[in-house]
Amino acid sequence: MYGPADIRSVRIAGVRYPPLVASLSTHVLDTATGRGAAGIVVAVERDGAEVARGVTDAEGRVRELASSLAAGRYRLVFDLADRFFRRVALDVELRAEGHYHVPLLVSPFGLTSYRGS
Image 1 (cartoon, one colour):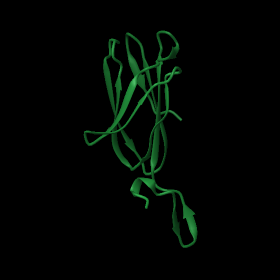
Image 2: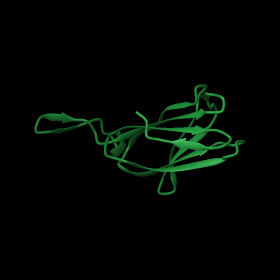
Image 3: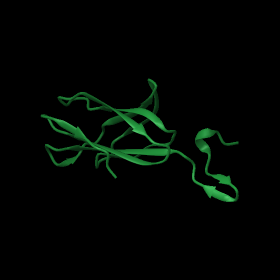
């Protein structure tokens, strides 16, 4: 039996609709070196509880950080460990469906993020 996060699709009046869920990925780029930041732990939290966790690969990516996420507010927490900015938390609002890519660009002097594609 499928739970709410496992619904594959919904059929209404004979028409199959995809589930209303979102997925999330990220990329951490070290702008001082121009390379992806490997080994960065990234957590996804909702209402203070961790719902997903990943570690950036050699290119600084977590290709599928979370999937089957319901619409709502989430917090992405980047543990940058030995850098000047030790921990970065971003609060995001996910809509009912679609893929969200949230890159983080870091250097010893600043950081920025944006909603990617």
